[in-house]
Length: 570
Image 1 (cartoon, rainbow, N blue to C red):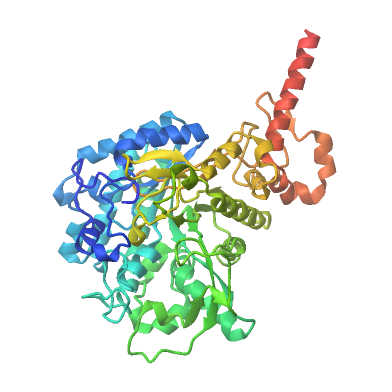
Image 2 (tube, one colour):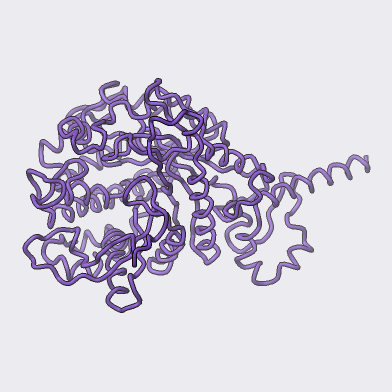
């Protein structure tokens, strides 16, 4: 929806977002839609060329359910033209050395299933979703090694069923969405309950039937803000914890413990669905990794109990969320009214997951900042996005701090490779590191931030030496052999666009080893340096604190020195 376009092409069926944007254009800031979006349906080869040029090694994109099953279910037939499109995209990526990270659902459920049984409000959708996922495993799983079942179920359920600002546009009549139908106090919980069950069933299917042969991994992507207590009072500290329960624990608690957080069970009561014993066992541990999206933070203050008349997810947590305290914002505001820049929250959130949920394998699947789409700016001015560079720089540093404290982070994707259709904001804001000219065939132009990422990618150390976030590149994932560092910008083909740190950029083997080998077998660091590192560095910090670029270049220098010595001996 955000990237792909080609809404009425290639046999694709309508999704709820097609219906929503065409039926309710007033709910989109510029009355636009995703019919064309960034036109990646036609320009995917150009997008892959951009990735290759920037040295990316991973690309996160989503598959459009209705491009595979136009009517949402097997009874409507499989669209082979849609299969062919995604095969072409995946093959093009692999040809250029880019690994696909595939999201199966990013909010665009089939309109046919919405008409048939009200979509995710019905348990019937669980089997239809599982059938769709299995087609994808069968058709693409020989090449796709990372699957994400759902992207941000919270956003889909809350904005779609509590506020009515997203498709399918349901909410109670008093909510800001001014919906004609819905129940903000029940439907968000029902829809997400069914998404969690669909996720668990699909993970079981993949693990039992496909994982051994295809050797892939499967997980889910969640989003959360970080919440800072409005004051140090116990009531406000408790409010911040409840806010985390209702945003992140809503999903992480079932995945780890098999039940919803206690605060949700107590405050929502019988409006919150419960898992059967069998469902609880099924969902517990149903992931190989967790995708985590972070953009912003809020202050959280305590609210008194509601009167019980106008129940809504938006007030159930009894937490007053604000970005301003005593007249001072928590950080600079970006273009979107909800996005305040607070890098410290990134570290807080990642460490919270580590400490409260058993330190799971994490991929940062979204992180980024937007700017206004100022149509009066000349192109060259629109490409100057220093705020975005600063955002990434500081957030990478914050993430590095969490990794040094033991968070099991394996990769980083930033939102977004390209400007795109931003849901209810339409095209009024731009998240991309590459500019898309919507008035000229969706031509792509690299912004200043794209050049910044490219410099990092190709080890132009002199140009980014002052960047504190640069040292993060030594800390993400494993680098079993010394090789050129790659920073992978991983956007979305169908609907997602992200930037990823390459999957081969850590120093050490991930088990406390401090040495790697260059391609000629030379160990790095030298034994003398390893000895000086000391016990503490040998066990953890050393591999996270080394600058990857320095290590890679040092390997190259060592290789050149060894080659010279070999020539002299000959």
